[in-house]
Length: 205
Ligand SMILES: Cc1cc2nc3c(=O)[nH]c(=O)nc-3n(C[C@H](O)[C@H](O)[C@H](O)COP(=O)(O)O)c2cc1C
Image 1 (cartoon, rainbow, N blue to C red):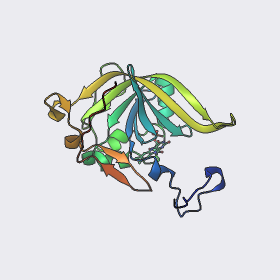
Image 2: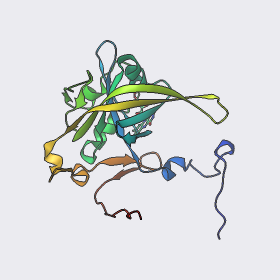
Image 3: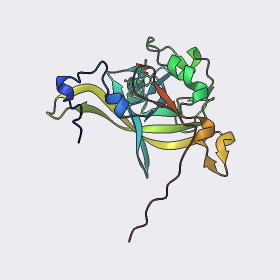
């Protein structure tokens, strides 16, 4: 067996760039829209984002430091996770600009705020799907020694789902038509869902 390039993250990876995010990839992107206490809209992409269960549906995103999305989610108890797609990729990227709190990145990126039903934050009108979420809990992540880090995981229960009917084919959400994008390895790397393959799970017994 060939010897692996083994490293302990706490001691350095000995590579030109940290490979961690190229290994845990592709990561779905939660394109998070929120409102602050004053009602101002905020939008930003989070790829430390995923679903953790589907009954009830629970998703989470993690903020490195106390960013606006985290603060607004804490204040309002709500957020929306919009689907990031190839057609919206440039807008996704634009909305990650480090702008002052209160600046509306949805407007900045030329996107249309569309009303939600159960949360006050708007969804991205151009996105093929959006999840309206109520915050369950914000967890400040601690390391294995119990030392608090500056990462905050926002967990939310999906209370409403929007799907653009143009992306429903025979009642199934067509992610190859949506061209969902995901975050990959290094600085500017993304993946795009352009084909799927199918495998049926083995039956028990
Ligand atoms: C595709 C993509 C994924 C990102 N994922 C994260 C993430 O998971 N956590 C994080 O803290 N920042 C992430 N960022 C950076 C934030 O989007 C950026 O800091 C943004 O300004 C935060 O906005 P906010 O303060 O309005 O929430 C990501 C950026 C991009 C382009």
